[in-house]
Structures are given as C-alpha cells and as structure tokens.
Amino acid sequence: MRKLIKNGQVVTASETVTADVLIDGETIAAIGAPGELSNPNAEVIDAAGQLVLPGGIDAHTHIDMPFMGTTSSDDFETGTRAALFGGTTCVIDFAIPQKGKPMSDALATWRGKSEGKAACDYGFHMCIVEWTDETKANLDAMVDEGITSFKLFTDYPGVFQIDDGAIFRALRWARSRGALIQVHAVNGPATAVLVEEAAAAGKLEPVDHGLCRPSRLEGEATSRMVDLAEVADAPIYIVHLTCAEALKAVQGARRRGVKAFAETCPQYLYLDADQMALPNFEGAKYICNPPIRPAWHADVLWRGMAAGDIQTVATDHCPFNFEGQKDLGRGDFRKIPNGMPGLEPRLPLIHQGVVEGRITINQFVNLVSTAPAKLFGLYPRKGAIVPGADADLVLWDPQRAFDLSHASLHMRVDHSVYEGREVTGGPTRVFVRGELVVDGQTFLGKPGFGRYLKRGPVEY
Ligand SMILES: [Zn+2]
Picture 1 (spheres, helix red, strand yellow):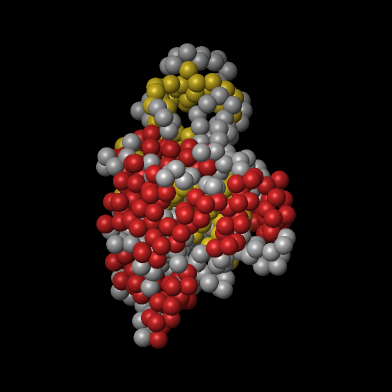
Picture 2 (cartoon, rainbow, N blue to C red):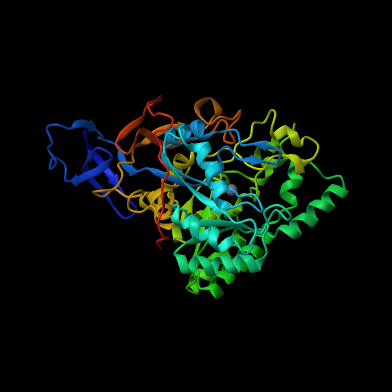
C-alpha cells in the first residue's frame, strides 16, 4: 500500500523544503520535488499548508511504573495513544531491575507491560541500581537485547542511589561497548538531610518538597558527573536537567571537549516553583523530582537549547491522579508520588518556542526527534525523513490552537498541569510505519501495533 503526501513543507533537523513524500508499506520510499513522484497507485494525502515532521521520540517515560507505593496511572495502551495524539510516535521507557535479580527479569517484566498494548514503537533503557560481580555480564546481555543506554541515580539514597565508583565503572564499561550512561544527577544524601530537617520542623507541605531541593545540589551532582565522564573518556547524558547551575556544568564540560549531553523537559520550561505553593493541596500536582524551579531558570534553559548545549527534550512522563494517588501525601510531602503527566503535549509545548522566536523550527525537530534518535541508537530508522526510514510522520498545522486543558488531552490522569493554557501548533495527522493512526481528533491506531525496538550504538 502506497501513500503520497503532497505539497507539504518537509522539516528536518537541518532543512525545510517543499517536497512530496512517498510511503511504500512501512517505510519512506522516496522524497521528491513537488509533482516529481507521480504514482498512480498511491493514496494521495494533501498536506498543503502543513509541515511534515519526523515522528516525535520521547526518550524518558515511566509508563505503568510502580513507585512510592502506587503505580503511574497510564499503561502502555493509554500512554502511547496519548503520545500519538501529540505527535510522538516512539517512546523509550525505563526498565528497573530489583536488587539481586538479573536485568533480564526487569526487561521481561517491562516487555510484558508493553506487548499487546503499545500503539507506537518503543524501546527500553535499563537502570543500574547496584554494582556486583554479575553486573558487567548483565550489561553485555542487555546490549545483545537492543538496550544501549543505562541510567544511574545519585539520588534516592537507600533505594536507587549508587556510588561514584559504580558510576565510574559503568562509564568505563559503556565506553567499550558504544553504550550511553544516563544520570539522574542530584546530590541525594544532602537532599535527604534537608528533608529530615524540614520534617523535624513540621514543614511538610508540597512547597517544602521544592525548598529541600535547591538547584545548587543539582548543579553540584551534574558537575561531578560530567567530570567523571571526562576522566572515563566516555559520553554521558544528564536526564531532566532543570536549572542554570547544572546547565553551566554541562556547557563547561562541552567546551572542554567532553561528550556531555543534556535533556530537559517541558515542565521545567513552562511551570514555576510557586505552583507548588498553591492552596488546598493543589501544589501536589506539581511535585516531581528534580522539582520545578523559579521561572528565571526556564529562560536559561531555552537559551541552552538554542545554543545546542541541551540536545533533547523528553517528558519524564510519570502521571499520578490527584485523587487516590497524589493525595497519599496530604500532610506529608514525602509521601506525594513524584511525577507528572507530560507525554502528550511535548511537541506543541516545544513548538511554542518556535512561535515565540526562542528556537528555530529545525532545532525543534532536532530536540524532539532527531537528536534522541541519534543518541539512543535509532537513527536513521527513526528521527529522519529519508528513503528507507520508518514512515513515522506527523502532519503539523503550525496555526492550530492546541488546548492543554485536561478535557482536551488523552492521558489517563485526572488533571492537567497546564489547565486553561493553550499553545499554537499541533498535529493533524500522524503515521506510524505508514499507518494513519491519528486523523484530527480520531484515533485509528491499535493496541499492540507498536513494536519493541532493538537499538544500536550511540551516535553523536
Ligand atoms: Zn524519570
């Protein structure tokens, strides 16, 4: 089955051209000047006035994840459906092993959560939560399964936190295998002291979650991590970077030639620490870790994106309902599940940066699709509009009003953190491997259509 997308503006990470795109089955067969690709057997799709983008890749999601005594509220069926409504055609989620158990168990668990449910293609990162005599063999086995990125935590003492020696060992191993080490970089032990002091003083409101997590503690850990990567001579990827201090560490490392990469998330660009202080426990909706920052950090992050020092925007999508989940922490912020919904509106929120002149349209495509494809071993199968690539394509109306309110979104959660807000630009039609899965407000995709992606070495 062939499809010919005509008259659109094809936008990639490097250029914008008026071109037609021919899809044959699951892949892109050809790209040609308007009118060049006449194909009498193809279904013609008119994209006049629209942009044609490579499908979005969200490289940081926590779908159906057990955490803090509950489970994130989207499963792979509802989460990927919402992703597609927002123009994201591929997600990379995190599999988390249990201490003392092989990583293959965690992979089997997460593949079990996704198979038969995901409506878009997906891959997994693997977390490293301990370093034992078996860890290297586990990591090698994961590379054979198509997992080429591994996340470690300097935060969550006693749960996920791992020491600097283990992080350094992981970096050295990754260097030898073309893999990428991702770090959640916040000084966890110092944070724990501040949390302890706040609790002793009876300061347990949602706003105190943020006050116990000053940005300098993220800057400190980020600086330490990029320095370790420099000495290990390995690339490093800082997940969910939120603040000026951490960006400065990454920028400094990059100027020295360190292969340091950074990801930020829309909540750090659009939300403000004051929102954690909203009355009636509303602040709990805005609790994530690291926390949202005072608004001036967002300007710094946008400039970092424009300068190329922040390479990707993912979401850290980890939704919890206000009723029944967030409210577990009423009266004690330590029990509020950390995380917020974000998978669906990622592309519209970052496109708004183009509307406001903060980044170019090509930078937008790079941040949400091409750079994650390269860094996570999916390029050019994903993240590119070239012959042979998967036909994961988004027809994008740059004028469309995109409503960010709960009533207009599809994530399985009882609120929106952007209630009452609207941005300009959004998808009109979305294709996954040549199949039309979203047409306006109609979902045509199928649970289980999504395939597990074996990923290759990091490219940078
Ligand atoms: Zn996360």
